[in-house]
Length: 365
Image: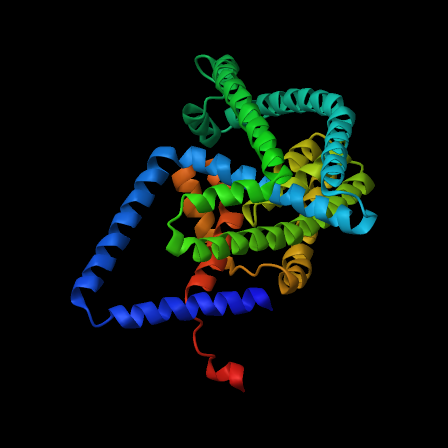
């Protein structure tokens, strides 16, 4: 209740200031120039230090997760916040280590088997294509035969793996920085929030404080709903793969849940490894795995997600897809991952800073 009253007071004060300045052309020109300069500075900052801003936002998102879990334990178990945060960090570390320890060696073996299966499938396709004129014409443009043959493909893959390995080390380092910074943010969030407020002019500090409160509340609500969605998808997928008999059901279920962090696109990313592994088992298993992922995603999109959005952040599907395309084009794959929480925060902040529209006639009826 206090938060809503504070929000309405800020909106009324902003509207009153706009009305007072509306009759002065010089003030309108000055406000327009200030807004233009702010937009130019924002665009330049995103262009120059966009990667750094994504790391900071990722660390803030990590801090929100840790803070929410620690506050939950603090209320339920009557522990201090510091002890609750330590319990959360240790538990997450143990769970991650258990998953990697149990699925890591088997995953490496299965990947080797999958590579051998794909190599043999390429050889069979080469023989089948060579038996027909259309296939021979296709082989002329596909590097399955001719000079180099599979050796050229192997050389290309080896070169790609070198770059991938370097990128992996860079990704591991970035993830380490995000986790460490997120832990420090979660230990004393008020310290960093007050530090940010000190860089804001005194007249704008109430608005900036409300913006940070709104961003924090939005990220907590979004992460709570998304975590429930990811857990349900991961559990259903893992159980389904185990029933079908697909190896690495636990790891693939965890992967499906993690990929579901990215709406729409993540469903495809999580399904591809399971389908590739099922290809080495047979056509029947492959169809069953594809059907399993289709059923789980249908349940998630039409039953689970609408129920979660009633109590969490509601984001229109078109806005989610367009934000993923825009953030992916500007920031690459990290932007694709963080597009949804970033868009949820921007929508919530925009809703706070702008006066509400009058209700539509259908809503009154």
